[in-house]
Amino acid sequence: MNAENLFRRITGRAPAGVWSAPGRVNLIGEHTDYNEGFVLPFAIPHRTSAAVRMREDGRIRVASTFAAEPVEVGLDELDALFPVTLRRAQGPGEAQGPGEAQGPGEAQGPAVPAWAAYPLGVAWALRHAVDARAGSALPGVDIAISSDVPVGAGLSSSAAIEGAVAVALNELWALRLDPVALARAGRRAENEAVGAPTGIMDQMASMLGRADAATFLDCRTLETRSIPTGFDAEGLEVLVIDTRVTHSHSSGGYRERREACERGAALLGIRSLRDATVDDLPRAAELMDDVTFRRVRHVVTENQRVLDTVAALRTHGPRAIGDLLTASHASMRDDFEISVPELDTAVESALAAGALGARMTGGGFGGAAIALVERDAVERVTDAVAAAFAASGFTAPHQFTVAPSEGPRRDI
Ligand code: ADP
Ligand code: MG
Image (cartoon, rainbow, N blue to C red; front, side, top):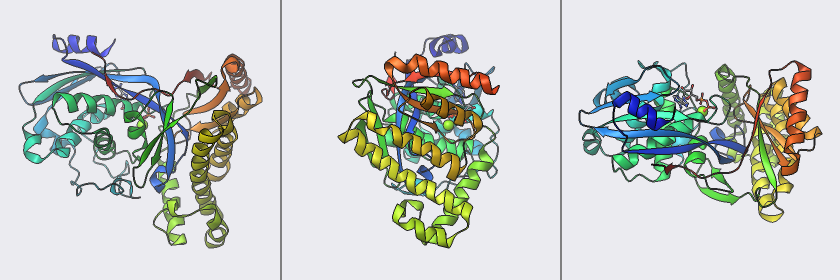
């Protein structure tokens, strides 16, 4: 069922409009975001839609095709639902400081179903993003959500739902917030309402998506640059290989990696690993234990690979980035140790079948890999990956191509 039909079923009326926002895939730059480093994601064609209409009574109701029951609360109850101490006004780098986001263990579990904390959290964050008087005067809304972004595959269905709700409310509530402010509201919902300690990459990638371009993001300054990929013109496709291994049990591993990065930065005497370069690695090796060093080496070399990828796209075109993607995978497998056998099989079998480069993408411990593939080789690579999974006794992967796509829009 689409969002508009769900809206009619829940409310008995037509929505005022339908807005949508895309998921994203990260081309390169993994676990660099919370180290104030660089990432290069792009928005994908898969989108989440929100059908929305204002209502008179100051209440907010959210429904999703993913959930059996709608959830309804008063807008004035949101502060009690998400009782996190308000932080001071956010400056550019502020939202990225290591350790500021809440870990899942620290969050008070919201008194609503987990999925509802995403759209309700966005409404809550947007109310706080405008001044207190304006926020308290905002009318209630009904929101119905549908999506074709695979959930939990590392394609950021969470940023897509946040983005769709954020752009819808921005327009209906006439907030006039810019895309970066909307991305911040999405991140805030995810960190403080849901309690997931993520960076802002996903929301920025979804919000700033452009056809045929990736978004370079400096996670310290939040400076962004749209980087044409040239995939389409060069006859290349990005194949997503969703291993269907869930990454939902990864929060412990994620936290452990964050702590190792903070420890490494402290031992180097720097604010974050963003401030280290490959020239600092010999000194790092002297200063810390082997595991911490390898975590540091991944982040430092990955930042460099993002910069090299941007430069290669500019000067040599997309075929030149294949080896950087593959090197990124090796670093995550061997140094950061966040790959799993299914992801390694996806990468190795895609490369063996002629992919120009391949890597796991997303937080790790499951989720998806991507492979850069000549258009006329997509079928061959897809078949080879499927065969390799079957030979290893793994669940068949879900494979599809994604082209860099546009960000949020109003559809109806
Ligand atoms: P990812 O962003 O990689 O897909 P996350 O764990 O960050 O995985 O976010 C997935 C969660 O977001 C889901 O478990 C659900 O709570 C929420 N979510 C995503 N899309 C929807 C949707 N269309 N309807 C309801 N909840 C959704
Ligand atoms: Mg997510």
